[in-house]
Image (cartoon, rainbow, N blue to C red; front, side, top):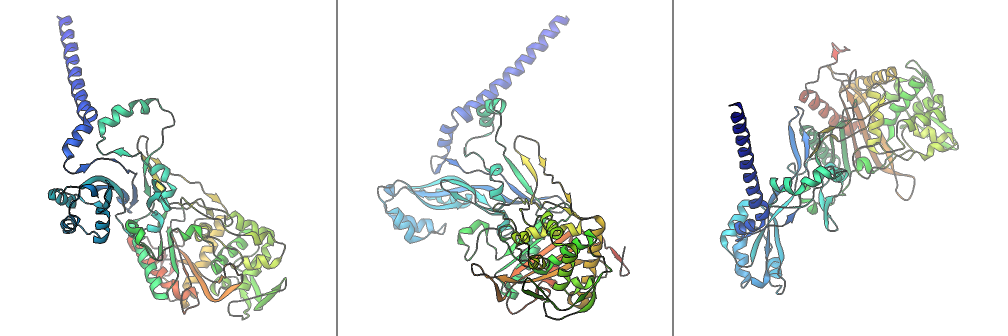
Length: 573
């Protein structure tokens, strides 16, 4: 009895196996063996399948971890014609133009190219328009199924995302994240009728046997779309208000290097980049170097504190000017201050004070710190074409080079290089790696969360002390103390630098770079904001141009992220 029971169980199991095998085999025959034939039959009236573009997705992520699609591939149609089959080009044009917008002269020119069997007329057609064209049943008019890159945010983070375009015969990421992660985002072009079963049966041997399979995946960026949008709006206002050549900014977590927003004005629509006028494609945050001016004084003072060359109680005699190696250096207004405390170097942005600190540190030690801060090398940010800072002056034996470097002249660095170094002041003294992608979701592998190591540069007490001093700048000196927050400690410093005349040497008389950095809450920073503008008109100092935009961003961030105040009754918690 038991033998018969086991036999029936085995027989039933075999029956199920054969049943599923037949079903799967039939699906394979229908979709693979005869898939192309059936595809042609189903679409013979108007659709021409073809091998087409495909690419991985790019996502931004909201503060609540919800994803925002930043770059995706969408499907639609391309309108083509066979001029040899079109008898009345005018009539065909009139019928098509009632559905889609096409240039009449171009259409007629292409429609009259007899002997040419194929001309493209319009791409990126949606399904509704394609269906209306199909219903016209026009001889010589065809629709091809197609795919293309689409950016739902249009202008949002366009300089950072980059775009996809032809490089020779292939569609590739041209710059930005699209280019940097092109090796992950690229997909093999596949026929639009290829499906799940085709993938299983056709690629089974490759998946099982092939070693070193190409990694493909989607990327999740650190960009927070609401924060990015707010930053871009403020930068656009800056450009409009001061008629600048360029306004740029970044909002970063100084503790781990995650970039919440990075933007520029003017910007462009990533979906129509070919129509952008007056736009230099690229990312000035990583590709251009500038003399940053007085924001470097914060680093100089921090180095002085870290080495023990100076302390918060240090005083010096400011005589208004000093001559080194035949060159005279003075404060921005040419005035002497007499005996002043170290704090006033930051409050009043005194060049001679920065020179004093650098001299107390010593040239070689001061230069070593600047190199250790990464100012002479790439930051490692995941964007293409990054350049490195120009610190060759610090290989000189002349004292003047170190003196000017102490207040941000004579050395040229990228904005992202400055940001990386400035984060050490906020985060306890660690050198972080700024980055835009935090996770990769692979197609055939587990997801990978990216990890970056930090390197200590300053002692923790140095970071704490310079943060206190920069908070005093905001409380007492920045616009006369009028922007002080009653609930939050804000550490900040402005910078105004004459711009170098390219290919000529020397400095422009009336062309400046304004910069501003600040972080908060200063006792335990969560955000560092860096802003800069090039050649603002009819204004000289960055405190006038960048203070209020920074404070707007500060208020937005503390409200949006519900940041806990670090002040109580006007004092630090």
